[in-house]
Amino acid sequence: MMLVVLAFAFGMVVGPFVADAYRAGAFGLRLPGLSEVLLVQLLRGLLFLGASIPVLVLWRGSRLRLAASLGLAQFILVGLFGLVQGYWLPTSLRLIHGAELLADSMVWAGGLALLLARPSETSRPVVIGDPASRAHDPT
Image (cartoon, rainbow, N blue to C red; front, side, top):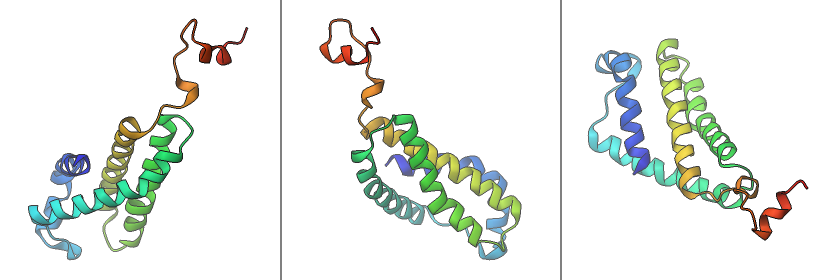
């Protein structure tokens, strides 16, 4: 559900910059219907979540590094790969959609990291008197 909301939010931001090309049908582009957008984003979200679960479970680093790594991987595999293949699209459209997809991927990955990833051991707060905190005590 989070991905659907993000897709709409980022789509609304770039919409004014790309809508004319879609309305004109330039380069084979068309505006999808609402039901089509919802279905695609729901399936995309489920696929991304399924692909991310093993990474979330096995990750041992910080949440920030997880979000950055997962977001960048998602952007490269889905956004950048598709945009590079769309060589017939004007550079301006590819740059706008590239920025949209990068921001969307990073926010999505950040949300997953915050909601589903365990905090790393090194990011635990040190509590005086806690035996587990003594391992981090330099004295």
